Length: 333
Image (cartoon, rainbow, N blue to C red; front, side, top):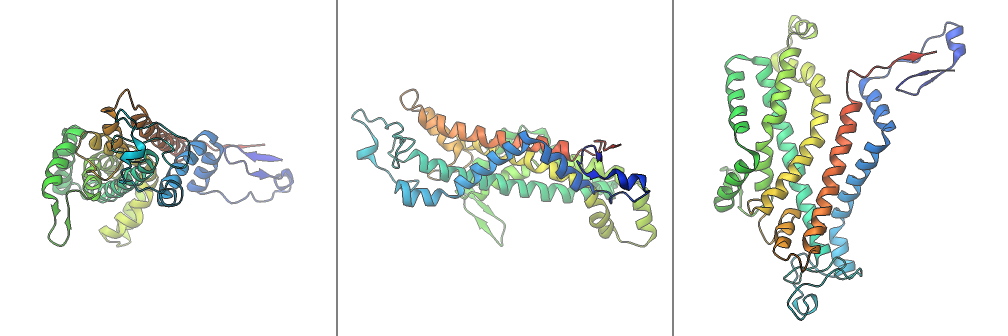
């Protein structure tokens, strides 16, 4: 029996001896899935991230049926000791991970804060990927003035440190909100940090896509599409977009991880999620003031943040390796 190295597809030796045809070739995404499936570490960390997502999505179930407390319910009489400090973890249904300085259940706020952090990260990732893809393809394909204008906009955003730009925009929009005429977003909405983070990371994806499109537009299949009379938008989204799809897929977990970290940093500094809405960043910021008496108020959200981002990053590395077009698939006898 012969095998295809890297795909683990058995090929009967009789097919070779009798001059039979080989099995049909696998597409790039099928090969990528087979490589990823063999990367047990990446799959394990991807499962870890998925477990964090599922647990956070079940926050209302835990709050209503186990802890019997909402994320902002204060239990001053039972959650603070005689010195006015919050109690530590009880390892029971109520106050499983302890309480904070206002008597709120840390476990409940941890899950609801995770929902908010993951929601902001997902929305910011969608904003970044969609706008960066459109702008990168448009700039790389048309070049000239369009490329110059878009590239200068990328460099303008790129020139500012991420957190300084995020703090500046977060403070301004937290005060005034965002009024686009047809829609108004209040300053304490979760969409404000999502929009800010989504815009900040556009150049990191857009510049890579633009560079790839600049090379693709000179390829023979693009010349053939022009000769067939295809329009610009048909070429951009029918020919070029599928060829940059693997790059976009690799960027998704990377941007997601960075968006969650950035949200936590901005919320810690007071320019992200606005109280009383919980997030992992706001919980860490509130827990700093209670050290060392109530270390659990900062340690618990910090561990959750590390596990979430670590899971995305390791899985993203495995996905990048699986989609690497330079990986060689050899047929061995």
